[in-house]
Amino acid sequence: MAEQPSTTAWRRSVKLPSERGSSRLVTDDLLEQLGQHGWPPDDIFAIHLAAEEALVNAVVHGNRLDPKKSVHVECEVSPDFVRLEVTDEGAGFDPGSVPDCTLEERLEAPSGRGVMLMRSFMTRISYNAKGNSVVLEKRRGDKPAEG
Image 1 (cartoon, rainbow, N blue to C red):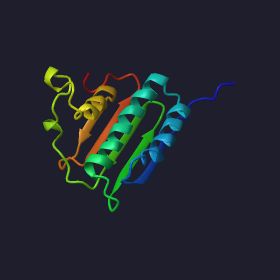
Image 2 (cartoon, helix red, strand yellow; image 1 turned 135 degrees about the vertical axis):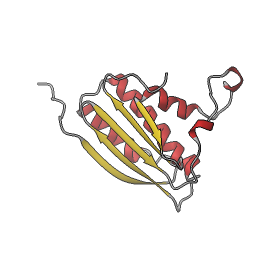
Image 3 (cartoon, rainbow, N blue to C red; image 1 turned 90 degrees about the vertical axis):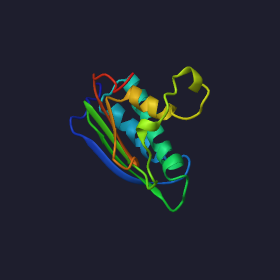
């Protein structure tokens, strides 16, 4: 008999060290919960990619791999809704200043792809005023924020 998706939300709050690879401390559980809550494989892939980008950006660009800083992550997964909030201890940035990586002159540039991917895969993406915290949300069946 197939396992029925849970109707209650799973929540987790975790503090990650500012080191490469620390995102797995969140993404492994997140992927497991997405499966247990019945999310389809295409959505699981999209959410995983967006979450990984947000976490790596916080560790590498926000906290600049500073071992004295950490990244705070709040996760929520239910059968119809996913929310991930990632907050670093960095100076923040202006998301509006990130250049469009799809422009011809930017195709070879290494920056801006993570923000574009998050916008492409999630229903809603928002930043706090300082620019050091991002909220990614996805509702089952909704179209991405941009894309």
